[in-house]
Image (tube, rainbow, N blue to C red):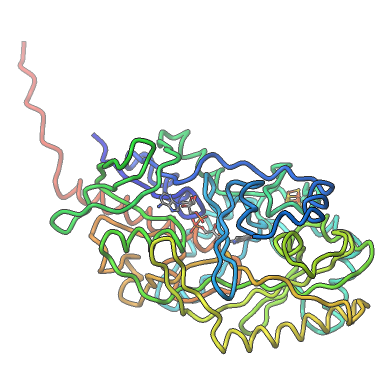
Length: 446
Ligand SMILES: Cc1cc2nc3c(=O)[nH]c(=O)nc-3n(C[C@H](O)[C@H](O)[C@H](O)COP(=O)(O)OP(=O)(O)OC[C@H]3O[C@@H](n4cnc5c(N)ncnc54)[C@H](O)[C@@H]3O)c2cc1C
Ligand code: SF4
């Protein structure tokens, strides 16, 4: 009989591990949320919602878009996805390899990234159908010597409809998300159980024996020979804490702040999000229509088609923690001074773009790239396994990143998750080789 593996979460890390491990193990994916459903709001209903001023609290967005989870800290909103595909369903499709820090720890993920390029289409072909506003923005960035680079997108970006709804779930199925891997895992025989939040890992004699879930019928023990936690940068540390394993107060989240201006009939709201990017020291800049701010921020009162935004995504300091459902995360003085510098650059870009300097306004700081609370070190990187974990418990998400990427993390999480799966599969094979299967008794000769 094959051994049983439980994979917690079905986002970038969980779906990858499930696909890679099924066959080596009998995999069960335990997912806290339900099947992903995109937000079907059209521009007219969004405008009506904004005018109604009913959306006084961003957390209410969940009423119109159930998979989104928004939490508040004094300095920012924290955003993540709950349901099949995790946060990848609301991602903007950016696919960048960002493994320099892992490589510095001795982790060479070349093989995993090669596999990814065979499995996930990644292209800059969306550039061919950019709106005039995006083309003009690109030239403006270029004229300022900022060295803009077209953003590689995961999925069928050549046929992207440039509708601008990436964050609300792609209505045309052009954007890749981890449900592709999840479906493959299920076709290979993995079991997916939704509405099944994992409370904790159960341990006995230094090994995990399974997990406890909280379901419709109360708490339930699910036995397993292997547990892989991929509940995301907020979810995984919370499960570990409830299992008696303390992580470190080194949470990063990559805060985002959009600097925007009124530009009549710019129609950026109908453009692919983050079409190009500029890498700066400690942050990136990219054109972005900020749906969260446009829905809730009182200053974002202009018609949607008249707003142009430049996103600042910060590589924040690793200072913060998760405890249960509470997240403690503030901007440090270093974060604030980087943000101030970036706001200056974005304002200059908008001025060059001929936006009225008196009409520049800021969005709400929000963040959706959590990780860093069980950071890999030179010692733990080769086995991708922290000593605090039992031998048969692994983590396969950005919780392992040594510091913020300040950049899209999905591809790097997938590469890391592939390595975790390979290590688990190889370990299992090694055990089988060491303990050969008992020989069958010879058949009696008739
Ligand atoms: C608006 C937005 C846009 C983004 N755009 C991009 C982008 O373009 N490119 C990019 O690279 N990154 C992007 N990101 C970041 C990226 O989506 C996430 O970093 C990535 O999805 C994290 O993968 P993960 O598997 O670690 O976690 P997630 O994808 O968040 O998946 C975690 C899963 O675990 C489940 N879960 C949580 N707790 C439990 C529990 N206790 N029991 C069972 N299940 C649980 C959740 O429901 C979820 O399905 C974006 C993020 C946001 C918010
Ligand atoms: S712009 Fe529209 S069609 Fe293109 S990836 Fe985003 S949601 Fe899909």
